[in-house]
Amino acid sequence: MAYQSINPYSNEVLKSYPDATDADLEQALAAGDKLYHQWRNDAVSSRAPYLKKVAELLRAEKQELATIMTKEMGKLISEANAEVDLCADIVDYYADHAVALLKPVPLKTDAGAAYYAKQATGVIFAVEPWNFPLYQIVRVFAPNFMVGNPMILKHASNTPGSADAFDKLVQKAGAPAGSFKNLFVNYDQVSKAIADPRVSGVALTGSERGGSSVAKEAGANLKKSTMELGGNDAFIVLNDADLDLVNKVSTQARLFNAGQVCTSSKRFIVLAEHYDEFLKNLKAGFAAVKPGDPLAKDTTLAPLSSKRAKEKLVGQVKKAVDGGANVYFGNEPIDLPGQFFPPTILTDIAKDNPIYNEEMFGPVATVYKVDNEDEAVALANDSSYGLGGSVFSKNPKHAAYISERVETGMSFVNSSWLSLPELPFGGVKNSGYGRELSDLGLNAFVNEHLVINATDK
Image 1 (cartoon, rainbow, N blue to C red):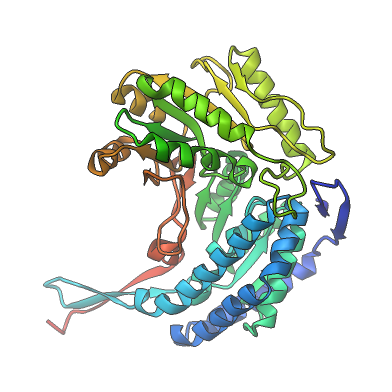
Image 2: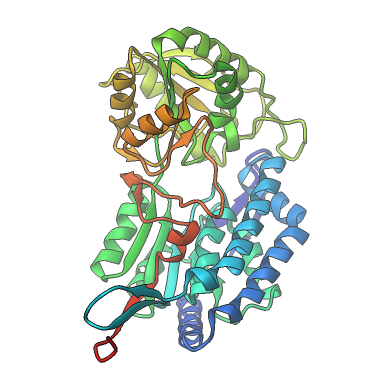
């Protein structure tokens, strides 16, 4: 596996990184396991100062870290800066709240005095994607650091610079040896790590294919796993929606990070009354973006992350059109050297269209017209995915009711997707299982250890 940073705007190879050896993997496993056993005897609070220092360094080195992300995966520099800020907030959240969240939980029983302790389980092996090169790392690292689970990272092969930079930052923060290690491992070494008895859990964010493969390895070795595997999120516009708000939100709901977001709004489901107006306004929003150098402040559309990503999306749109979809807007080449794909709107996608149940990872919106709310919910649920989704209505209670009818892990009323440290993140169906962030993410890899004293009643 070649770990290379290739700038998707200039197509320039920035840097290549050497593969990890089996000895590197063994060293990381040994150091992590040694630290795990030490941490079992240490107070949770003893780890917080290290995380506070990590947060401090993230903010102090924000511009450098953001530039690395922008150069190697193409995201707008403003989005990269915001990602670093969010990472610092997540790290602070767990440093500030983990002690309280990890307290023993008392249990009511007539059998005696009982509680369960929340304890570390061992080294966590994380496989993370390229679309949010730091955020995806931090979502696993910060809570598990406070729990007392060291982490070994296998990052995406096209964002090695971000992984390397975070590894160095954790070292700079003075964190104990073994607490975090990035390794440029191959697939055989991933399997070897998952099978190792020192690894207690596996976290993955990525594709269905990758998740299925890693989950199979984890299951074969009786390792707990969490999976976040993408989505095909619905953006439902009800008859009583505030259209000014819808118009304000819809463009960015699809085009943020050049549409390369698991929780992007991808399927826009609009009641017939507003369908034509919605299409007109979405087209205007898509047409207004400015593609260009993602390091430039006036650029509003970034390139896709790689040539491979662009080729896949080109193929998907062709497949959709060949299957009967109508190109309402876009799908015209952008005359720039980078891996740009034009913001595109597809309509008239029938259920037998091969793209109907596929996630398109890029600036392509599919828009559907429905006659009533029941049809909207049925269409939203007619998907193998269930990660997130949005519902727009001037009646928040009714929007919440519609949201709960949608088979998904997260629903956002009158807003697009968002991520905050205190809110759980995760999905159902083929979007995966388990949760990250919030107290649920903190508990993902803990041992709920029951302790009961039958003589104390």
